[in-house]
Amino acid sequence: MNRTTLSLIAAATALAAVTGFAALSAPDPAATGDTAEAAAHLPVERTSLLCPPPSTSDLAETTYTSFTPVTKGTENKGGAELRAAERSETGPEDEQDAGDAEGDESTEGTESDKDGEDGKSDEDGKGGKGGKPEDPVLAPGEPGKPATGDTSGGEAPALVGTADGRFAPGWTVQQTTEVAAGTGRGLQGVTCTAPDTEFWFPGASTDADRTDYVHLTNPGDSAAVVDVELYGEDGALETTVGEGITVGPHATEPILLSTLTEEEQTDVTVHVVVRSGRVGAAVQALDAELGGDWLAASTDPAGSLVLPGIPKDATAVRLVAFAPGDADADLKVRLASPSGLITPAGQETLRVKGGMTAAVDLGDLTRGEAGSLVLTPTNGAVPVVAAVRVLRGEGDARESAFIPAARPVGTRATSAGNTAEGTTLSVTAPEGTARIKVTASAGTEGGTPASKTYTIKSGTTQNIDLPVPDGLKGTYALTIEPQSDTPVYASRTLTATQDDVPAFTVQTLPDDRGTVAVPKAEEDLSVLQR
Image (cartoon, rainbow, N blue to C red):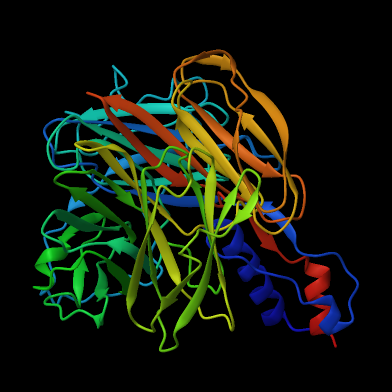
């Protein structure tokens, strides 16, 4: 073997460990005849997160909560921080060169170890509001302990975050906003996401009662160029200035969907495609009568989907699905309840025509019990994306939230910003009985971690009786670790009451990207020597 081949292997392994976004797999033993062990899973060494601007309301109160689980195999160094992004001064018609934006990451994370600090970014711990632009909005103190910061009003910026060393594996940031009144009033929550190149958002709207924005945030040192496509019930909507949107370096660009098309449609699928660079994307869906929340991206198009954690007191559930290709999809619709899989009467299937958005009202589907939607093909599998809009409450006292189709928990999932009252963890195992370990961290202001193991029966959804940290003060984080090979899906619901309105927000809990698969050198070398 020559030196060049060895260098390529080393470079690929380093790339996987450093970025946290790549996953390398060892050759299939069945295909090569090897009996060596599978690829090792090592902690990521660097990761990035992006938080959209929380609100334009002067009545908004926003809390950021950062948490990194303690992960074996990490060295005692590194740091994490969230900094304010700029408002992009470029726009859809700006033709500036995006240069080498492809693959750019955000600015370097701090190298200093924050041990001994209290996790707050300025004198009073209220990072962001009134601070210097170059100061971090939030700089966590140590893994295993959540850190918080907050801001108020409608001028809070998007945030660009980086973490390295022991702070990188599983780093999770929750952004939760309470809006007391007006369009979008209620509880709005979103898990800050890693930059990527493609996003699907079924469940958006250009209806007159809705004010939906897609927020694009660029962590890179060069401009990113993005296309935003809209699909309604009859296919692609005619749009203006939806192509070639330029998002400046370390900047954010909010785009009002109704400015991209003259067509008013209740159910729209938004497709964000990045031509160059990487961005974070999220849709903020605000309703004049039904409050509002963040619509996170659906998992990648797939033949079968799981939408976990519909609140048991949901008064209305609307399923929206989209088939990206030319083929039509026929989906079997089932509810994973505490007692097993149930087919809703009169709504057994949903037909989704290729390239078109389909929707169906499922009513008060859960009937007072925990539930998750499970979508499977009735015949041949056709890739689809999906989300549900959920309402709680009655009459004028109703609030809305969204649950997109989710990825499985994987190796470990992490949820930050949980409260002693008003937090529900929902877990479903649609393919077989599974065991999970749930750990509650120490609180932001004190408490002792606690863990408990649960069994989730095949085809069921359970709202977990959470372990609560002893002496809990402040908010805490949850980690979910599967103890079996059966896939599980999870979501976390936060609830609050605002003048008799049942405010709530739901975040799905996919794998927290704490580890990356790296092939062992001897496995690769033996294959290349053949």
